[in-house]
Image (tube, rainbow, N blue to C red; front, side, top):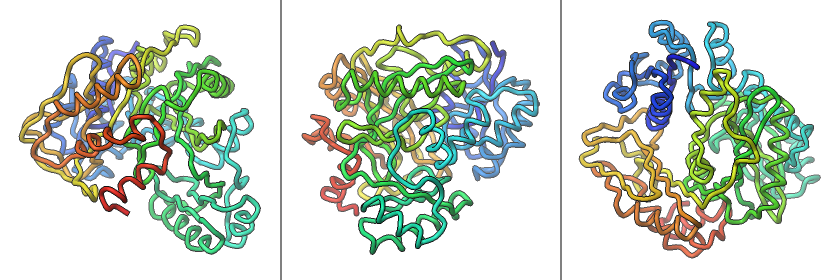
Length: 450
């Protein structure tokens, strides 16, 4: 087991890793920008190192600064959290070159799954079902139009290096293809430095279902069921739950085994999530995230496991603590992502927290780095916390979520708390009868957001 690890992240996820390490008797090092000097993860870690100014490019994304922090403190391994450098294969290679351990998958697996075309081709070979689409990148508009006609409209054009909803455009008809194709390429170039795109069939009423997998890097892998992440705004998840309200036990076992077998075949190590669109009883692979997901707590809730602890254990060379046979679902869990944003336009709302009170009680978990007097800086993602509830079944989890939202106090900035209070009143949310387009239509109707 490691003696000391460095957490290359900030906010609630950095705090999450620090807590897991402390329970394991492992010391932690927090890195931070000058804007985060008073952040909770800095206060909670055993040691901290300032690695640069507020700009993430000069701090949290600075590989030399993070490696130097390891050398200064004697940290043996690096946990990347999510975002920032968590899926940067070059970062993993540098870590290994310096004799350190990356708490996550190999650089090769990150590289394969980071390119959407390579990932899709790999998954096809591993027997994972995929959305009908181009076999590789689409270089010209003429080729795009020809593929659109063959696949059948609507189609979606995606940047191969895309993520977070960027570089994705829908062409409803052939007339839309030129605009969608050129826009997706431009967004891919500006956001990821790569204008290559590919084309897939656009499913009209799918749900977003993702399978949590975990491997030991030695040919053994398991799945931890699915999460339904269909409530999304501009391709960003806002409400996640497990198990999925639309998935049967038979479907879970079938797609879960496919995913676990695929990860075992490639000797995958650590946590990963295989994401699908699900429509009419069929699963279609869209991408794999080779890291811990924001929504991992709902999986932890229903299985009673600590995924971060397991990441650290496996990275240190220890075997997985669970097998597929002893992973049994218990109840239902829901997570809502709380952002410092002003409704109805979701504008970022940085500022000082004048009062903070976290909800409590049976089955309630609040993952946040907030505290009274904390100043939310304007330089980073607006996620300020995750409220997670667990119940014996979905109705109890929904009731518990409503109760917890009523207890939660975050004053001094605008937040998305009112959004979730309103959503809980909707029949579609109460019954789970929604798809990935439902929330955007609801927002347009109720908040006037187009």
